[in-house]
Length: 454
Image 1: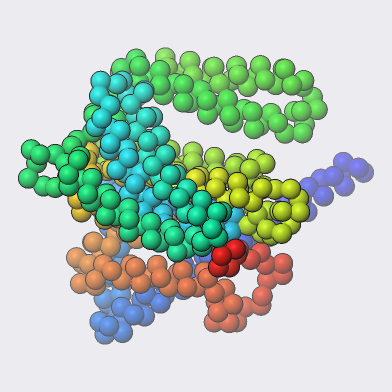
Image 2: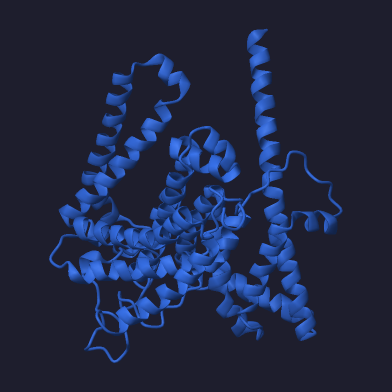
């Protein structure tokens, strides 16, 4: 009887979890649908033809998924959105509205380019992590300045991060135009980074893995990931109760070692025999894998670590955090450093993996940072949800050109649709009123900021 009761209890827990998940997903999905419906109405009113609406959305879908390399270009556009959305979500969870992601994106890009130019003769397994680290540090420092101002003077991060954006734009323009400029190029752009500092495209992976040092580098990375996943699995209560700590540690290290050895010896010949990307013009790069790993890492940081718990407590109730002995000033600084570091990595990936010249041109305009605010809000600051929202925004960005070409509708209508989605996400009461829905019980509200000067 006890076993039957246990099965029923587990089924009930599963049902409750599923209903909670559906309730969480319902509002973002409805906001997206209403955003596209609103966009369709505007296209119809301005063009006077329903055919134009269908042509516009068909062009968007075709450009995002159906044209040659359409899906891969959507993944390329999605990658920086994931990093920037994660960075903003970390800040939002701690009650900080980091509106300076765009500036941190720029500083991360120029910092990575500097590291890729100045350091020469380094092998890939040293130079590539070095430039990624340089981009992360650059973005973190740029976000750390508003954090210090907030902690020391009470200056609100919305104002300071917004002002830091413009400083970042002008500073980047100066560095591209003068100290780092390529004098041999007719265009205003930096020198090309070292080939060993470039982000690999997926098409290049089989070729790159023929170098034993590159294969060793990938093996070490995957071994670490395998060890981390094994540690997470074997820390669950049923394993903790069954095995001693030393035995669990030995097992997880062994799993990581096996993953590393298999990667080093098997992956290079396997990719040489068969590989999923065979188009030499395909721009999809390993940054998409890094973005997925970052999403899992941020989820683990926010929900499975003490630092993440402190961030969430400070964001939810600063007074309770102070009463519990949490150092709010330290938490604010750590949060902004992580947020800026993720934005800096986004800029690094964009310039080292997507830029045609593998350099930073003068007119390096992205708009990724501002779009990512909507992505974080749509996902309700959930790292896994951010991946889905980033894919949506990447598809819209990638499909905009073909939409304009096929229907004559300006590609900037995409920005209008994104604004409508953000409006509906930020105003769930309006969505419920429009659709005659009852308010959900125990709705979790996300607090973005805690007031001016707080």
